[in-house]
Length: 629
Image 1 (cartoon, one colour):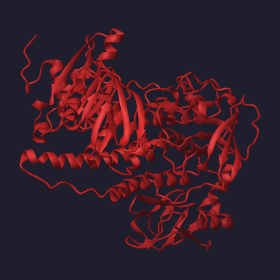
Image 2: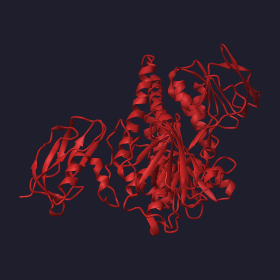
Image 3: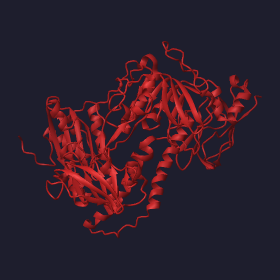
Image 4: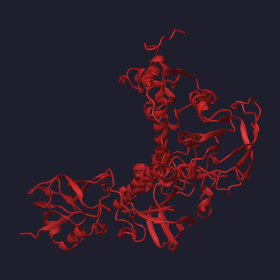
């Protein structure tokens, strides 16, 4: 009789006493390598535990409801004949899952949908696969011999934001040996740590506060909220922590080597890093640059004064200033204005252009402008800040310009003193911060790295993605680019013709109300000479919007005059960021107004507003009276 092998719970991060919620096999079942045996459930994720080898299940050691930790015996397995000859290797894997790197791995590595968060990431000790390329990795036939650094990888990804970690994980899934370089303590980049995620957490709180205020109009009054800022800050940080730990777990599961430090190119195949342990070199066959961007500054202001902050500092939520000026009326500035206004600050916004969020159509901005004009202390348009003087009592600001948005008329406002100033004048790419010239990589005068449709730089084995390659600087654009770059590197001949060809990349301002748009704007269509029609549905005719006491919204579709296909869309109103996705799909699939107008939408919902706009375009709407032209 063959010797039985104990199959144990592998490394599942820092979790202990995890509940078994499903047993997927029974005695007598044959199992293949990687067959799921049991499902565990932590407070963060469900985890399927695979078999490290093939064989026949002889005895189960766990049942549903049991609590298990790393090393607990799941079952007794009679190994398949081919594997029984190597009991030492099998036993090693059973007690040490990391030893799987000694075995030949499949080209496609299975990955759980959701990774178990892990406090400790793979930082210091490289997995065995980092010492030499994985068996599936094949250098390009024309590639010269690459000098070896302290660490070598098939693919190095510089930057661990949404684009970077997506690229690294996809490359690993496709059988590549991957090193992910990140200068900050946790993965996720600006978006997860000091951008998209913490801002949305605080915007949620802001909406709860303002919704409670406004229910007084429906006859329900709440007391003024008590704000425990330390507790609020802690809750926001806990959201970030859950996600960053989840990414750490995903990296560990995929055996992606994470190295922390600031990396710069020293040659076309080498990056030198400044780490906590001194300098290290990382050599590579391919590289994906995902180094992102940083907050832009206006020269000449006293930035050494801690009362002048950027969005990163604003999200730290150290206190709630009484009077706050936001320089820049774009998405970042207005989202922070939404948060601090709800928390009790008196907000002023100054914008150099003649409207807020200059990239969006003016008709989408009007409902937002009208709403916040009632809440904020001032909105100054066509105005610039010419000086900031640091005084003991605050920051004295002088202005210049014809402030049409100012209640004082067209004259620039008088100098004002603020407790805090948020600088939100955009972001600049980090193209000049990574030693690109040492690798021969072209960087333009603005700091962007030009790439072709396959996201290759002028150095063919080096790719670039995300903010560093150009507008729009959006996380969802970066992640799609990162996945494509990884697939092109790993894909061989079948990916030679693959290109990044998104017809629409949606933009969302998570203000109150939200503003979302995709495809062509009216402004762009006119500049390009595109013949278009537009169909606009006012939310004042939406039963759902009226029932929510938020009927200020608008849904607009732009369509080609001849083909009737959707060219672009814009939505302003609550949850606009959720609603825009249907129009993006419509554009990508070449949908026309009839397609959308004949698609049955649930009633009453805000999603109907897209349907109604399409019916307006088709002349079939019954929820409004539209006289025939």
